[in-house]
Image (tube, rainbow, N blue to C red):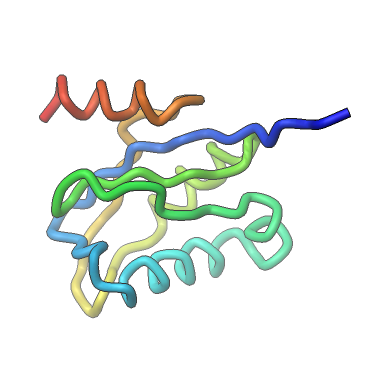
Length: 107
């Protein structure tokens, strides 16, 4: 029996240019989320950057059931790369296709 991994995609907007193309910034964002969630919850949630849609909008993927924890942790991350900024959760979905469709409609 093969079990499929259930994931949730979270559309996130930063209040300033997040520069997710720089490899240090995603790692710093994950460290901020890990500091809020704790090591065990972070390991279970397994948040990753799935796509960068613009300079301040990106998609994170997380295991199902931890999307609310990720949204809460992102709200508590107040800086990235030495710059002050906030992160806002726009939408949570089970497919990246609907996230990209929302991005196309809103932006």
